[in-house]
Amino acid sequence: MPSPRVAILILCYNALAWVERCLQSVSETRYDNFRVYLLDNGSTDGSIPLVKRRFPWVEVIEHGANLGFCEGNNRGIAIALADGASRIVLLNPDTWVEPDWLTPLVELSESAGIGIAGAVQLDYYSLEFNRWTRTAVPHLLAELACPEKARPWIPVEWVEGSCLLVKREVLDQVGWLDPIYFAFYEEIDLCRRARAHGFSVGLIPASRIHHYRGGSWEADAAVTEERRYRCDRNQFVYELTDPRRGLAGNLAAWGRTLLTKARVEARCGSLQGGAVLWRIQLDLLRHGRRIWQKWRADRAVWRQSPSTRQGESSSS
Image (tube, rainbow, N blue to C red; front, side, top):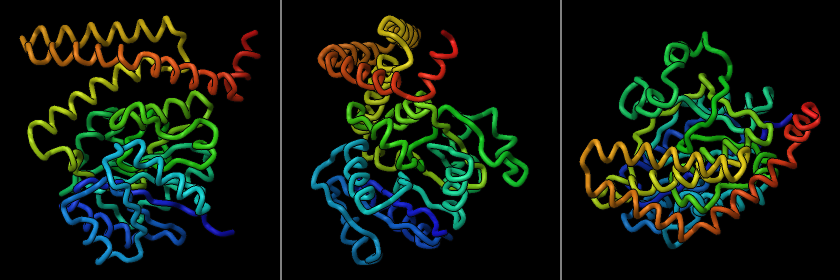
């Protein structure tokens, strides 16, 4: 039986410092059925000519503008699915992968029925865990340190979009990345929707990548500030759109998040931070109808999921 066909999507925006090492490592992947798509969001740093010259086996898709992480990847997902891929891998350009990184992701998604699978992230320059691994799953560090003794896969709430495998049936049933986020929280939202629909999300100890983190967001202070704004703004969107909660529950979660962030800014005495927080609230008001529509659409999908109907039947 042939191996599942995998599409590896690498979304780039001025990633010249990273993309060559990333693609070189991907070329050494020990898996026999994958295709690489480099999706470019309007880079101007010479990275695309380099890729075309050094890696002619990579399919380059130029968007011509910065569409963000969500829409940029969604366009690649559409092409990959039309080409017959049954597994989609999102991979950041500021990563490099170990040769056996892909096989366990594919095999576990096949045998264990995992809908979304993620690799263990190591530091870009060493074998130590990177910041995401240390902060997102601190309770798993001891187990992840010995992958040969770890569970084949570990259930988690979400895995980061820097290296995320998602099965075609998940995308078909729960939807793709939601452009309302543009960048940040979109993979957490996708994992939540998948879990709400009955799919498992798993971290795969045998799959290892090295991730710098934030490679395209370090240009200058303004870009760094924009990153913070988008992260904070999208946390509110995420809290307001949980499909498993009613409208009142989501509003309560928004209120708790606002209070927590306001207290932090008050303790720091940051007038600029307070101004950013209120700017975010105005943005949420401007996009209130769109946020409400997202919640309704996601909730409708959730209500139609087999696991939801089974749970309602069991409780009735």
